[in-house]
Image 1 (cartoon, rainbow, N blue to C red):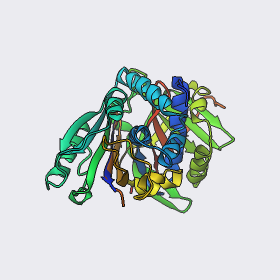
Image 2: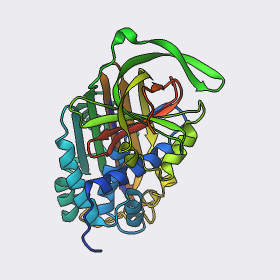
Image 3: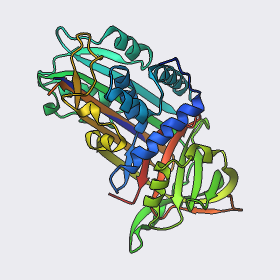
Image 4: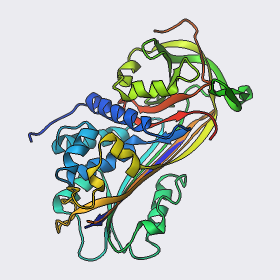
Length: 391
């Protein structure tokens, strides 16, 4: 199984110390992820809200109001010290996950010449986010291609062409990029001999044949009548990362399910209620690639000021104090789920420019739309999405 995510953000010019434990941060990330996923298009999608959070957190440390308060609220963190302590601790724990391949890379590209990050933000970028720093001439026609090559190298070449050449110009001051790559094999792998085309319900009136995998093994399983859904948690090798599938009972139930999750349903808490039982599991074998326009999505989650060319509050990124705003923010993500496991990747970028209850031997048959999330052992979501059938 593979997952990839990339976030890209180009920038153009124009209280007391708080500690959060890992459970609180994981819950915060899960809530952000649920709201993020609920805003995606009603098609099969994959995303990495965590990839976006890395760059939003860095932006928070380089901004004042109005952007600062919006960013902290969206992240579910009370202040800058909480951002620093939480992401430092979280990054260290991600590096120690056993049994999977998980690569997280952050990069800050800075316009050549008399431009540099402010000393405080440079320290945070390196120590908190382990970010690489590189000077670049954004007016050079090869600039976007060089950034894209870096993204490809960090995502096993799964994420390509994150940035178009017209994303960058003489007003570009910074480009922030996060790349996230995951690959894991199931503890209990599916036997390909049991994979066969079967009907998948797109809606109550439409079905389409898709390759469905089958296995009967012990998994963590549960049900919740409150949201009329089943839960199945399947671990990867090392048993420190897992995929959780939430399957609505109703054929047309996935949109209501996503609304429940976004409205504060405690998905992390639900993991503690699952029980290990033998389950007859049938799930689709699928591959999804998604591109997300964060400039459209994030304002729906209350993050608006960073895109305002006149009053963003992003004035602590550069050492010259120039006011910046985010001109473009995009995420590309990929996932492939098969008999062996999953591979996923995502990348997010931003450009800144100048101002202007369990059953006995249950059956889990995912022949209708469902949500899925890849969790770490700390219960933090790495990737989340919805499968609604072939796009």
